[in-house]
Amino acid sequence: MDVIARFTQAVHIVNDRLEAMTQSLYAQLQTSSVTDLRSAIRSGSYQGQTAGLADGYLQANLAILSKDYALDFMRFCQRNPKPCPLVGVSDTGSSALSTLGASIDIRTDVPAYNIYRNGALSDTVTDISDLWQDDFVVFALGCSFTFEHALVRAGIKLWHFEAKKTVPMYRSNIMTRQAGPFGGETVVTMRAIPASRVEEATEISRRYPLAHGAPVFIGDPNTIGIQDLYQPEWGDAPPPVKDDVPVFWACGVTPQNAILKAALPLCITHRPGFMLITDVDEQAEVPFV
Amino acid sequence: MDVIARFTQAVHIVNDRLEAMTQSLYAQLQTSSVTDLRSAIRSGSYQGQTAGLADGYLQANLAILSKDYALDFMRFCQRNPKPCPLVGVSDTGSSALSTLGASIDIRTDVPAYNIYRNGALSDTVTDISDLWQDDFVVFALGCSFTFEHALVRAGIKLWHFEAKKTVPMYRSNIMTRQAGPFGGETVVTMRAIPASRVEEATEISRRYPLAHGAPVFIGDPNTIGIQDLYQPEWGDAPPPVKDDVPVFWACGVTPQNAILKAALPLCITHRPGFMLITDVDEQAEVPFV
Image 1 (tube, rainbow over the protein chains, first blue to last red):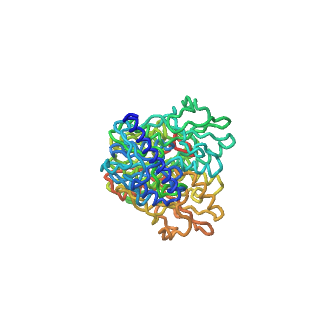
Image 2: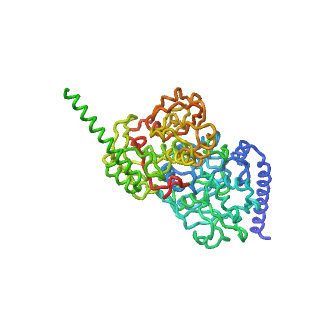
Image 3: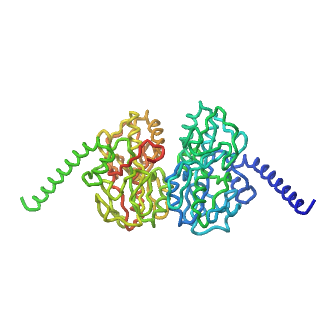
């Protein structure tokens, strides 16, 4: 066995151990308080994904950018509330999100961050303290976990929950409304729902306007520019839909797509699936503690 | 009869005629299309209040301020969504609100505007073309007409509708969340509702988060700092509540109160009751045409 093969094997072993440790810690954290969970994330001891953690608390997508772009980005969110439901905005230069949790420090309290430079992913890190700038504005956006939990409570089964997979995501041909440099296609998620429960699923999700609200499209994927339902652009490929109906919701990856296209010098987001956990009840009418 | 008395009498006669003309035009406009209605407002031929006009279309509160304050004001709205539900924000320097109507020109399309300078009302005008600045940002905020129409459709009687009066408004002790220079008390409206229908009224209004949503308080006015229910700070004094329950909703005058306190060099709002009429269905899930 040559040196490179030995080295590769060693890396795999370390990776597998890290994965096993993360899974073991995940199992422990499922029963932790929000405070303990945030401590584990802040210290860097937990760097995994957050689906299924902090049951009942609002989780949020994240975008951090310079104040020079903040007004346009906020207008983009206001004009596209289904993909970009704003649940919190920091003061300029502040790493606190006081309306979402008394102790949140956004520089350390997300398990993993994507760093985008000039429209390309440049790094994925677990702490952004050394990248912090005094002109940063932090945007937190609602996420689909909120309405998914409500669907599951109503007895509507979701494949990706049961299979522990990530919901499939697609770039649709539904265009967002432009604001300054921000625009582009709406990214959508797909959940296959029995025909008899589509109306109910629609009405349940409509109750959560800060978690993408009602579907943006129901039916033939081709109509919204999706060529192959079984080859999503992000997330996992779904099993055959069969007699179910494909139902499409606006997705929180839309602002990341807009940020990429705008090619800002520097922008930081969460790593998809690795969300900000807030102190706010995910059922709250408005996201206030 | 001296000169001043004659002059005063002449002014009263002209005022009475203007009032009669406005009322006659109001009656005509009640059956007009939104386009005709906006034309009448744009040309200055109608300068009256808008309650009861353009049935089924979203009407909006208005705030126009320099881009220097726009990000903070937008944060104020995001942090206080019940009194300040944003339904539209213009591009900087643009008098269009493209998401609320293809042809809106905000400089002419509101029946009357209040001009605030350094925290005091300096003028009320019917056209702001000569005051327009290239750094202005226009904010449109949802208004209570939307949920009031839904209450009336459900058979819940509203005194101020039947008496053709203005809903009473009060400065409560419920503080808004500060953003930059914007803060202060939440202004609330009061509607007396039969005890048996308070829950229904709450649930109906909750469906309209862009029109102030569910009540902020139900019950004894003293609890939220209102000393005398029969001496409102704005609007008309209500008749005795008797066996009904006083129900309080967040009010669109709250941002005007915040703007006054912030004492900006120049800020323009609608004259309360004289709203922007949009092309958008007031029942729409999100305010998009």
